[in-house]
Length: 627
Image (cartoon, rainbow, N blue to C red; front, side, top):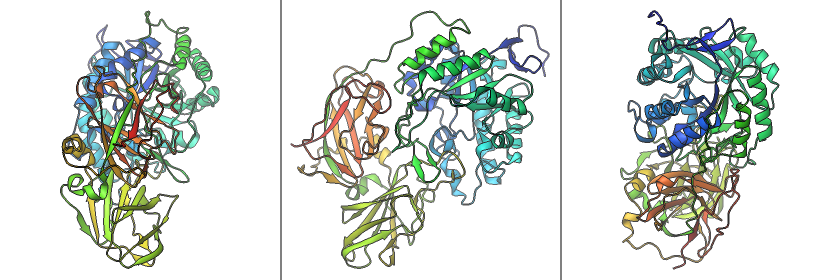
């Protein structure tokens, strides 16, 4: 390695004095996690400045592999995926970076950041020395890590440490050959002088399987843990060197159907103060969570499949909309006792605006829109095929066949092997009949005549991002049985809903006559469209879906994510201002999967207390047309 010239940049571990050294001087980081993939590029600088003004000297960043390589071999680092621009903004702001490039990140993100195309190999063992997996990982890191190398602190950038894999000890495989392979790749691409580390949960099993010689072992824990015990455990694996909590939990995630998670601000600031007093290096997870736009939310599977909500607010110090909270001010008061923090005011919350009502009209049900939504037409198969087999990884697919006999009495449609991943909406001749849901609803009743068309719209609600069930195939994974018949001879339609909407549909077709509005509620998977008139502003707002059931919303072609107020806890969707047009109508498209409210139903525009923990100003409200 080159001989160090005095004044040359360096970042290393001082095992004698139990600390990090930055440019040969003792250094303690106070960091916060921020995910560029969950925040519109337009707001990156705003969030970073607020973190800097709180007194942080570093940020911690995950790189989601599937966000950059959605199609195998095609890499995207532009626009909202411009990781180097994000690193540059952090650098300009005065923030160092703790980089967590995966390849697996968890992060409550779709499949923990692993691309779903890995599942085309049916027996692949993810996060192991499996040949197919290791080959894909090596190809990806050969693209990513050379991009990161110039950004290393020792090369003039701001990346001080780099994590290898992520909480590997909590995975069943415990494959040291895999971890050794990663260590070799990281060393090859980033050089011998980069500080590489691992992070694991605060248990012996996790620390044993997740750590490896040559990678500095750190722990993660929250306010409920005994700090002394947790750092004692780190010491058993790293007898000398800095104390590090790589994920100190300021909040927690929500699943649909859970109460909203809250972590007390006083506890967070007290425990933070205790760790900093011990000289520990702390990263707060999350500092701002952001939003699971589109289909990027993950899911957990403990006793059953549980999908993560759209908001990743996380009860963090900066809200989902990037607004400073009481928790942030409490944290800043603690940091002040340990380092000089920048003088000057904290940048305020971004302005919010109540845009009032949007009136929506029905475009039609999915069964009648297949020419638009599935331009290539169906794939024919005797038995159902999965999303992965058809290379459509996210969103929705429609499975169509005909009723094999007359069913005058309600007849059970059964998923005997629990093969609906994750939710299926069943219609006969375009009329909604009910739903099947993974792990919870394996039977629904159907009636109809022999030869009637039965459509089963299957929703991927996000792949499992943690634990042993991350090989999470989507669609119909096994046969459906109707009465005593196995349903066969399927036409399977991959739906490119996002592509159609990005190209201007349904608003571009609005000259066509849509069905006359009906006074009663509408059931099953139906599209609605409307426009929000411009008012010269493009300010943040929230979309409130009073009495809508479950579905997906797009504004000006951007997929805002899923809504499910009936199940909660999340009641409003965050709409970043930059999505809105100041001087042209804003196009809103809604796919309601189960049931829209009756026409003429009006919703409140009083300030709503959303279940994501913030008092929202008046949101946009959706109502149904009566005209």
